[in-house]
Image 1 (cartoon, rainbow, N blue to C red):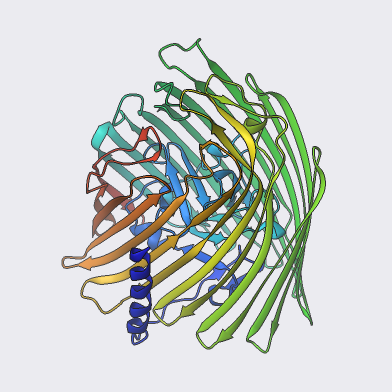
Image 2: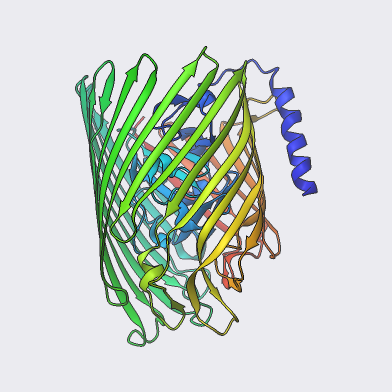
Amino acid sequence: MNRLLMTFSLLLTLTRLSAQDAYYAVDPLVVTAHRFPVRAADVSRAVTVIDSAEIRRSPYTSVQELLLHTAGVDLQRRGPEGVQADVSVRGASFEGTLILIDGVPVNDCQTAHHNLNLPLSTDDVERIEVVRGSLSGLYGADAVGGVIHIITKNGGRSTAELSAGSFGYYRAAAALAGGASRFSFRLSGEKKRSDGYAPATDFDQSNLFLKTAADFGTWSFRWSAGYNDKAFGANAFYSSLFPNEWEHTRTLLSTVAVDLKQPRWTFTPRLLLRRHDDDFMLDRARPDFYRNTHVNRTIQAELPIQWSTPIGRLAFFSDWKLEQLNSSALGDRRRQSLGLCAAFNRTLFDRFDINPTFYGHYTSEWGWRAWPGVDAGVHFGRFKLFAAVHSAFRAPSFTELYYQSPANIGNPRLRPESATTTEIGGSLRGGSFTASLSFFRRSARELIDWVRDSSGEPWRAVNIGRLQTFGPEAQLSLTSPGVPTVERLSLGAAHISASKQSAAPQSKYALRHLKNQMTLTVDHRLPGAVRFSWSLQYRERCNEKPYTLLDAGAARSFGRLQVFFKSLNLLNTTYSDFVGVPMPGRQWTVGIKLNDN
């Protein structure tokens, strides 16, 4: 806690110093927090935007790892390069994080372990918006801890890249992009593999993504399709009793959206088609000992409409979803849901804003339920104070309900998990800096977790009762802070405490959140036109030993050709995000990249 207090003091000190800087940055539009495009300075929620500049200079080559340095976000990895990762926000379960791609939910109905099986490379991403806090009043199911919205590029530049590194790693990626005044397209592909840093940690991944867009003034059209293929050794991923697991997943998704635009209203119907295949072996050396296959399909249609009226902006939204699963272990399952949402945004005197929301949700198993919320804010010059109260829920996944294996046992009697989050915070924006501080409390009910009495027993899915989660978060971003060679500096800190009100024994997920988290990222421009970036993070989980990670990358451009070097875990720290699943030590990658301009 003393470290956190020191971090908060540093944030405030740096904020005062940065106010003297004369550089002015663009205030981005944020679309996730309110379903209306809103300037980041006007958002009445705790929001982080990972912009294209951060992505371009990051030492990471997987979309998942771009989330590592966002305060309040916990990326738990079972291997490098996005082999498999779970993401949670503010200490909620990874099942309680909603993932969007270009406004469309892509969560997996079998298990949220597959939520980040995304057919995207980092070059495909324009920006990522992270909204922390419950948000089912706007987005329906799964937005318990927060929403992560990945917004892809329209067009962009054509590129080709080759790289190689430690543990037999190589990566080849290319993108072809173009268009005219009304049209744009982007086709990208990526292949990466590794021999692994330990037994049964090898992987082979492929991504293919296509996005086309056309804009005719009063209406526009977008279509995207992607394919992700991952085969990997899953060393003790799901149980320490079986260290030689293996898994092969394939994800195919396609989205279609049409924007109909008039001066006072916008109508944006969207359609998602998603298929996910999962082939899992409990013991790679004995394929017939225990092997299961799963195929799930999701069809989702959304009909959002927005109106600008004399009293404010209105949004109405309806969605229908069909989820189907054919599984050798979970059986054949089917679930339908229907959602109806209303949202309102009102600004008074260019200073006050209020944003009530309401979402009614129907599922074939549990009937109708309602999830309201409201947030409000007030400006005092560059400073904005905000407060929010929002509710959220999630349905049990098919794995939590029906899975049966020697290591994990589901529970068909599980009830939906729900939560209410209250928060208060403030943000300060200047020409070259942003700073924010927020405090939240989430009260979870019917919390779903996997528990057991001793390490020799299988995990069982249960509703463990209530859990109170609370804590502060702080962020600071400085552009051109007046330090020689430094172009950008970002700081983040979060502390989460939990008060359990249940008799749950050993917890697999719910009580393993990050207790303390601190991050520092610095971008340099060195002599000789060398760009150098490094990221430091301190992580401490509940009842576990803290650790520190240092990642870095450098690049030098020679016209259209760029040469780069990246290294992860420079301190060679021994750590794991999951008990019994050690992460790799020091890694390095060297490569070249060719840009079309």
